[in-house]
Every structure is written in C-alpha cells, then in structure tokens.
Image (tube, rainbow, N blue to C red; front, side, top):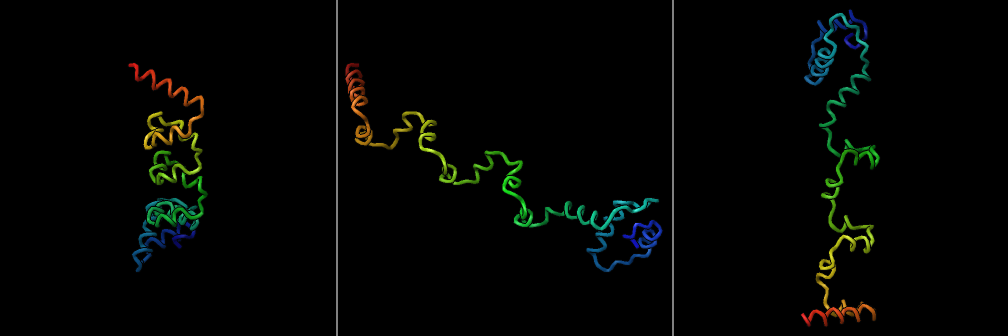
Length: 142
C-alpha cells in the first residue's frame, strides 16, 4: 500500500510496515522523508524513485560502469584541455602533427640542439652556404 498512490493506503502501510531487510528499510525511509506524508497524495511512481535513487547513488558505481553508453564527446565534456594533455604520453600528444607545425614553435637554437654541424651544412643549398660563409667571415673580423 505504501507505493499505491492512495493516501489512506500509504498511511496504513507506513504505520504497519515491519521491515526485515535493512536495505529495503533504507529505501522506504527515503520515500517517507521525500514525501513526509502530511496529507500529500503520492504521485511518485516506482520509476520516479528508481531514477532518483540511481542519480543519488551513481557515485557508488565503478567508473567503467558510469561511462557505459556515453559517446566520446560526452565523456570529455567539462574537461580542460590541460587535464586531457596530462593524461597523454609525449608521443601521443604529438601524434598527427606535421613536423613543420612542431618546428614553428621552436627557437632557432632549439631547432639545432643535438644536431652535428656536418648534418646542418650537408642540408644547406648553395645560397645558404654562401650566406653562412659571409656570416662566419664577419664573425671572425669581430
């Protein structure tokens, strides 16, 4: 009678309910607290209770269960890009980026770091070699 929607049955059920299962007692207590039964007809369905109960207890589920059925964009909702980047390994962060885009962010000295002078010279064209010779000659004069 407590879930009937009939106020008299609800009140009778509340007065005569003798719970033997602590979990069910807890559920019934939540329902009574929610509606307080002060002359209030109970338009609260079992579906309503189940929805509200799940919402208030979803934090008890393991993360994998909470994420089931969510699209990738829903899973990322509310996350800052910096938080996402922290979860990626360096090679994963660079995946899909063109080398030219990566090099744009580096200063010239950073681009040359770790390279041998022979490798640098080998990749210069004739005009660049002439310019390099001029720079070296000007540097020697100083």
